[in-house]
Length: 97
Image (cartoon, rainbow, N blue to C red; front, side, top):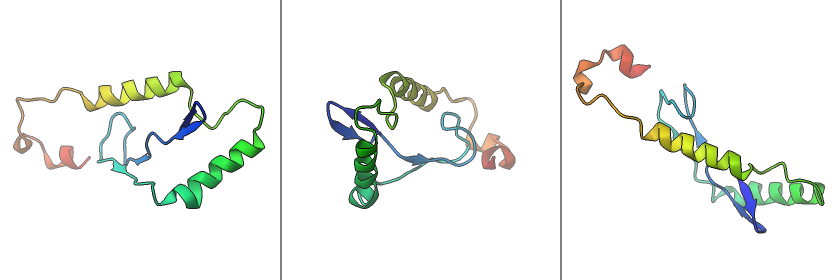
């Protein structure tokens, strides 16, 4: 989540299983947050703005951090796969890990 020119943006909320965000070993679950805008997200933003007036906004990621995150995400999603192997060539343990 970040603020730019007075507007708030929610880039993504994801939940992964085992492994890191960039080297997944389980599917990632994307969360639809529109239901939570009024009940949680907006209240959190308003509280943060009131309690941090005139100070640096530490709720938001910096532009540099957002760029790094997006690059690492796309690099991980675009990794090459072994085209010489079919799903039948893997052991059951390799698939379930």
